[in-house]
Image (cartoon, rainbow, N blue to C red; front, side, top):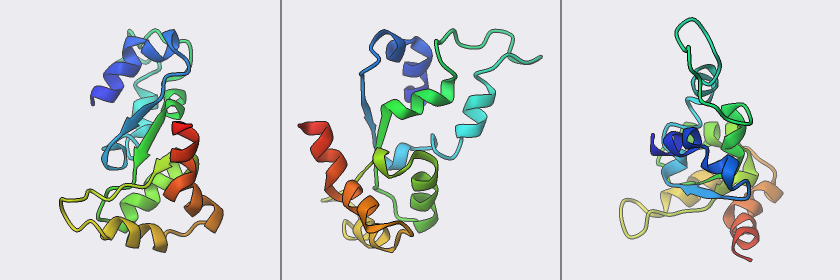
Length: 128
């Protein structure tokens, strides 16, 4: 959860244009987004939430994640939570079954324009 530590540190408030690329479909971030947002607000158990200028879930917009996973449902969840504009195609090559991420992305229930963004458009935009 080092990514959360970076968010809690305020680095994205200090540098709003900062972009972070997180490996392996963002780890647990897409799956725990609701919980992360809940712990970013005051409650009887969270008496000192992080002092950030925006709700903590908003900082996920500063993140891009690769598509390296080997489970269709995990990729679909990541796509639904973060959106196509925050996914970058990755293969895990030379490790693992490097062809699987492409097979999963080809099966993803999304418009071809989103698939093009994931395969190359987002990387072209970020690296230009």
